Length: 136
Length: 92
Image (cartoon, rainbow over all chains, first blue to last red; front, side, top):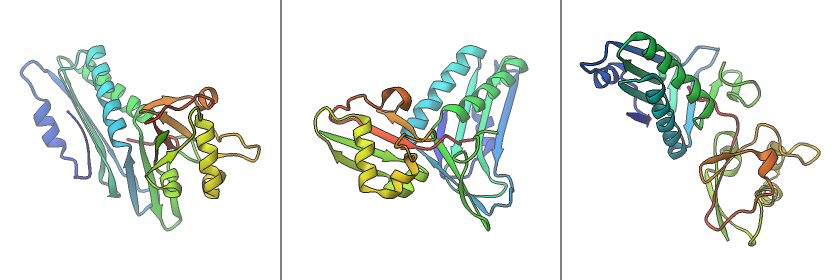
């Protein structure tokens, strides 16, 4: 399931949804707000286009790595340091496919999903990626 | 013809999230961007360099498909098209 939400992410809920009897491995990725001297982060989405892109990425990962289940949730709105920005859960028969699928999804999300982050702090405001290479 | 223009992130702050623009039949993506630039000096400064070329970090989608601005600025728009303008992606 793919979601873009202003609600806090529950990784446990995603894990519960991705469990199945034929899965022997589950890999999770959680992206969090890093304290780079910022006070908060604002996350913005082109919602309809981002959902379509994430669904395409999910299908690609499922077909390429034979995943049993994929869960992706991306936050929007105002986030504090330490909060979760994105969560990905991949389940597969074996660990190799689950690791590869999870990595594929986060890397493609960063390249293709229309989402933006603005850092706000004492030093002012800054759209990530506009003045320096994005997706470090 | 009517075109829906969506703007995100830094471009939303300048242009607002959504507007409809009325353009002459046959108008291109470049025509639309130049009309926006004429109406909003802050957009002109953000989107175009001193030579009038579109800056590298201006990204575009037409009807939710990315287009390469170096190749498709002269593409004519159709009535009802949706053009999205935004800076480099930074999700995750």
